[in-house]
Image (cartoon, rainbow, N blue to C red; front, side):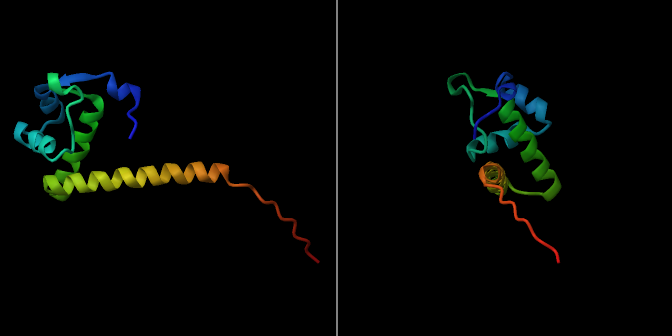
Length: 106
């Protein structure tokens, strides 16, 4: 999925990410181990605003539904897929021809 520029302009360390999301460091590391988030710059262990947004979404899922980290990964994947399908539908709706029908009432 393409990341918007405003989400990739922010660069933070793991400690900053942990602090910004309000979760335990180990929990965030579990997200990394499950490939829910990845280092944006692996050799520097840096994250962007996109990863912060993902961690915050994961945190809400964990809190609201008591979801495990593997379940959070699946839920986020399915939510992304739903959003992609919605975008595709919007594009197809814009391309669909409009058919006008005149109905004569007697």
